Length: 482
Image 1 (tube, rainbow, N blue to C red):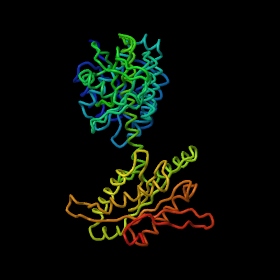
Image 2 (spheres, helix red, strand yellow):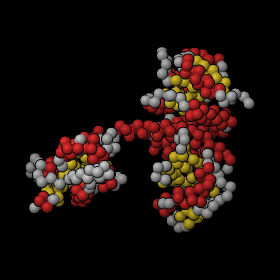
Image 3 (cartoon, one colour):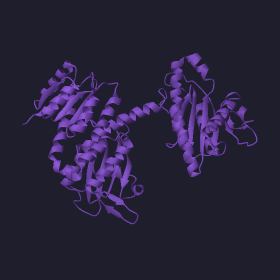
Image 4 (cartoon, rainbow, N blue to C red):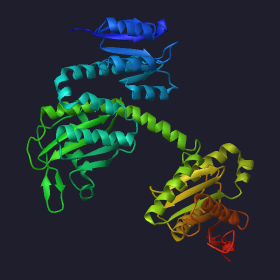
């Protein structure tokens, strides 16, 4: 068997030797070394390499410089980058520039071997399918996939490309929640998904053995009974093809294409195309998921895991524009824990922080998926309720107030702490038409309750004749309802 030529680029000799020793254990790789980017370019120009493995951080020229040169001068040559644990952003940037994959330091030998073997396999498949790639322009398509880092955009792109290149007319993509053991269809084509809201479960039930063991695209030999509902008929699937969507280690989703009119609608050429595209999608999905996770960290509160104040502004801008465009309503709840300082003084800030986390959990349970919870600061929270009038917001607020009043905080730790909340409400367009005024009115309503009887919900009332809107109580303690 001909060995694959791999060039390892790193200014650290020990790192180069370590890579060499790991890969030479496989006895299928011929390892070459370069101590910097210029030397690597010189060796690439003089030799023939199947793969380059490059460190990102080197003196003078970096791994980015090498990737840029390879992309421009040797587009068929693939690069794997080695990056530190704290520099995921560098890996993301490298992938966008055209790197095939990445691995983090310190190197884990088994994982390193897997990444390299997978890269060599992708390169081998690409070479074997050179004619196919040229006829379908799959190289360009693959590059487009690997450069896409928004996860939702990536799923849509892969699904659309698979549809286009396989000639499928009907299908769907579902994602798998590994922790919950659930799936969710996010994209469909060629049939009404609302009439088939459990089609992913039906397909999985019929083909569980095929799906569970699928390492790549597969067309089952035997068709099993799964029906599809249409407006005027119920038809059986006569042909079906599965295309797994994977990151480095896990199954994250599945594309299912089917045909209700033809037997044998999917052949070897379709699985070859799907294999090529799904191989490129695998690395891109890992990259996009990392980017998505990094983005989530920038918009969530470190303690409570709800949205932070910075992202709250984006939510309010978006929902106000939506309400204005659709001529509908939206409401804000401004919530503050009553006498929370006493909890910190008596039990300490660690207990207080855990209570804030429990409060966030209560608030997330109290709203719909289309709504949002943000920590405004300290023990203050803001809830943004889509398509909700002040009356509807009052119902939600009162439910939250009652839940908090009855809740025993830190019960499992043996504290059984009781708290109450004061909540202020302001709504668009009833009370204000801009974000700042809505926040002001909701804040003012909340403070009316907090500095009054507490444990109460107040709502702002529009008054065009006054500079400040008067406040009306909705409900609360018996003393606050008088």
